[in-house]
Amino acid sequence: MRIREPDQTERRRSGRPLPSSYPVVFDAERAALTLTETGSRLGDRTDPVPDAVFDKAAKHYNELALAALVLSMPAGTIWNRLTIFTGQEAGERTAQRAN
Image (cartoon, rainbow, N blue to C red):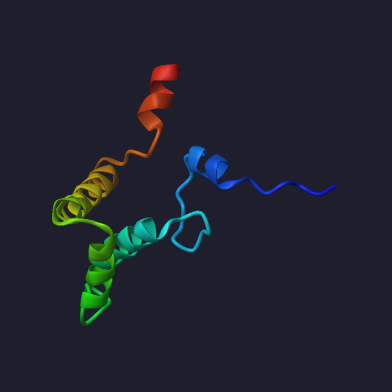
């Protein structure tokens, strides 16, 4: 029996994160993912965000959208750090409410 591979819409609706290597990720999304990943890995590179990465994202987003993308990156880092400091895990609060 052959299991059918989910189509693009099913994958997008699944809510699972889409790695940039997935074929269902559009060029603009891939550029945004690359920019955010590059911008969050500052310690392991001599040029943390190369111009080529930023320029590729700029091809798909206007200045306002690009600024929003760049400014949203630290917000994710803050939430991740807060969960580490407080010992919370994703979904824990929802699970507690259900009990």
